[in-house]
Structure formats: C-alpha cells, structure tokens
Length: 626
Image (cartoon, rainbow, N blue to C red):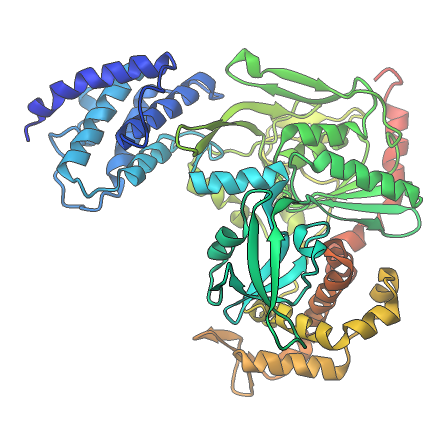
C-alpha cells in the first residue's frame, strides 16, 4: 500500500469527522458498528478538553506528536517499518500541527494506516496509548482513566456502590466474610462474619479471584443473587437469597472521645458524603462533651474540593477567606469565603498530616494554619495545589484535566515542582529525608523569599512544596517481618475468625458491648499466642540460630532466633484491633490501633499547651476587624 494512495481517501473523512464532532453532531456514528469512529471521537474529545480547559497554554503540535509516539509505542509487531509512513515519529521537524483539524486529520491517517496494515492490532489499546502520551508533558495529575477504573473511582467518590454489603477476603481459595456491612442487605438476612461463600447462583465460587467475586456479587439495586454459605458448627450448606441494595462507603474511619473533652475524627478521603459524615460525627462528639478536636488527615489523598471547603468553613468566622483558584480561563477563577460563623470557631484544635496528605487535605490544613486557628502536627504534606475537572468520554472512560491552581488564604501555592517529569515527581516522597525535622528544615532553607507568606497573626508559612507543620513529629519506624507475613497471607483474619468462633460468646458476655473496657483490659493468653505462632509456622515462618538476618525465600520467612518474642506485641496489637472490629464494627479497629501504635497521636495529646499559646498569640496579633 502506498502512502499516497492511503492519504487522499482518508483526508475527506477526517475533515468531515472533525466538523461533525466540533459542532457536537457526533451521534450519527454507531460506536458498536464502527469502533474506529469511537476511537477518533475519544481522540477529539481529549484534545478539545485539554485545549479548552487546561490551566496553562498548551501547544497542540506537542499534543499531536506525543499522541503519535503513544500510538506506536506498544505495537504488537515491533518490526513494523514506520519511516516514510503516517506512523513516522522521526520526521517531526518537517511539519507543525497548528490546530485541532490538522491534528485529527494526521492522527486518522496514522490510525487507519496501522489498522489496515496490521488488522490483528488491538486498536482500543493503541488509542489509549495515544491518549496517555498526550498527557506526558502536562502536570502529573492530568490523566486518562480507563472505563473499568472510572466506574470503581466513581463509586468511591459517590460514597456508595450497589451490591450485597459484605467486606470479604479470600482465605485458602474460599470467599470469607470479614464482616457484613452495617445496615446492608447481607446483615439484615443474617449473614455473619466468618461465613464462607462457597457457591454463587448455584455454581461453585471456590478459587474465585477478588475481581471475579466483585463481578458476581455486585449488581443493580433490587436484583437478586443466591449464595451458599458454609458456617462453623453447621453441617449443611445454608442457602441465602440476597436482594442487592445501595451500600454506603464511609470516609470517616473513626470518631470517638480520646478523653473527657478531646474528640478525634479520622477522614480517609473527601467524597460526596464526607461533609455530612463529618457533621454527624461532630454532633455526636459534642453531645459527649467535646470541647477540643483532633482532626486526622494523615494519608488522606484528597477528593472533592467543595467537601474540604465545607469542613474548613466549620472552623472559620464568616467572611474569612477559605481559598482562591486561578486558571488560564477566567471561568475557573474563584474566591471562596467562609459563611455563617460556626460554634466551633476559635475552639482548640489540631490537624494531623503527613506526606500522604494531599490536595483537599492541604486545603483544610492550609486554611486553619493561615488563620492561626489550630496547630498543624506531623510531617510535611504531599504538595498538591492543582484542581482537576473530570470529563467523561464517549466509551465510558474519562480524563482528568487540571483547570486551575489553588491558593491558601495567605496566597501561597502548595504545589511542589513537577517540571522534571512525572517519574521524578512520583519519587519525590522517597527522596525526602527520612528524618521529618531534617526534611522540613532542608525544605525551608531552599524556599525563596517570594514563596514565604504570613498568617493572620504574622507567622511565616511556606509555599512550593506542601504544608510544613507547626509541630514536627517523627514517623514511627517500628517494623515487623512477622506483621508483613501475616497480612500478606491473611493469617490475621484466619486467626481472628477462628478465635471468635471459639470465644465470641464469652467475649460478648464479659465486655457487654463496652469497647472502652475491652481496650483497657483485653489481652490474648499465652495459649492464644502460641496458637498464632503455630499458624505462622504452618505458613512459612522459620526461626533459626543460623539465620543472621531476616530474609524471604520462596515465600518462606527465615528469621533470627527470638524474632517472634521480640515482635509478638506488634502482632498482638493488630490481632486485638481485628477482634474489636468483629464485635464493634470498623471504627473500633482504629481505636485499638491508636491505643497500641499511634505515636503521633500520643505526641499530639501533649501539645494542648501549644494550642493555647497559639490562641493567645492570635488574640494579641490579629485585629478584631480581620
């Protein structure tokens, strides 16, 4: 096939497609009958959304040339000669694409040439490669999302999915119910923790992967699924018919009183339901006597900006600035101000952050810090100051495009640099000093005067790389090889479910639903922990006098003599937290975990004097009108 003979017939179709799509008359194509039309529609949609909305000026020539590189990057036949063809990525200097029409025309030539030259080529994947490469020179948070991932992500941020309502794990090839979700359809009909799902719709479910379990158990609200349950102590298989329903996904992991006046709320991300969950938690804690709060945003990677703003608003006085956004397009420029004063304005509070706290977490932390309304405690945050908009594509996939940058009330942009490329950006966290204080000091030393800002009370804060806490707490470096083995093989779950089968009734009778008493008094016996050690040994744990350092070989953990006794307290703490979850639900896990392991939280509880000093400093340095 000559390039010339290929070129002219496709020129007209490219022009027609461009005209139709740019004017939104794209429904004339049937994506089922003509997948190539869908691929080209996606290509146009992506480029148009980037050109119309991206935060910075974009060179369409670079978008096109990157997309062509992507198209040929993973061809199944790497021996295909591309020089002198529409796939040629070596002669870019000879031409320049100036607009969307030219970009689409050239891409369609390359697409059709490849699909006709290699009919066996997976053009779905090649188109996705082309789209991903289009984002290569944009910021790291502008991305392409496949249809399957898009649906999962959408569920997480909608705060619900439709299914039977169980948390499960696969133990010894069998689906095991970790816990039925509170208020879900499985709990309502009597499915219990520890139940093993051995059949789904009368077919064996043994050996299912996680993905296959989800595919078979999730489904539209109101639909039915039959499961066969094997329950400890019951000889026959128990049949259940479950009517699927909306299952909430909670973003507040835990909310409880740390002492008689200190409330604690842990938020894992900012989804559509987060503000409502947060307010519900606040009301409950206030009813229990809360007068001061610790808000835990560690490892919270962000989410919906509006949810973060609504939560921050709860701690600010009316007309205080919450945030500003600025983009290339004026429609994305906004100033957000606090609304009516909340009853918790001016009350003692702390926010816990670390390197996993990003985006919406930094919005909340930045607003509180800039207005001197609370103490930020922990380690320097991630450093994401960009706002994305998600755009759906014709086939159910989507893209996220950065539309603006956000600025905290003092005017600082917390976004860390990304001009060295996505790989360098991704590894920035690893390159930070392992010592949190050293990391903060090294960062501050390099911050130019132009990125130094002042809070309402005149304290110095910094832009250009996350939020530096007011009080640094080093990361807990406790490590356990045994913990890794037990979690990797889910021996923790296997042990706890077995323990509950034997001791559940005694446990309920002794503690009578009193979690506080359980946290203070419960401990496994030596016999219990000997049983756990035996379980470890049955699953690849070996202690030896000849082992000089812990190593893993062929899925076996070889450890030095005495390793188990040295690390027993770590395993015991996790197992206790899992027992609590079985009896009191998911939130209780964090209460026990925090009791045993959370050094940052324990350090924070010593800092209320510093919070009082900050309050006094603000009162003496901020005018009443501010």
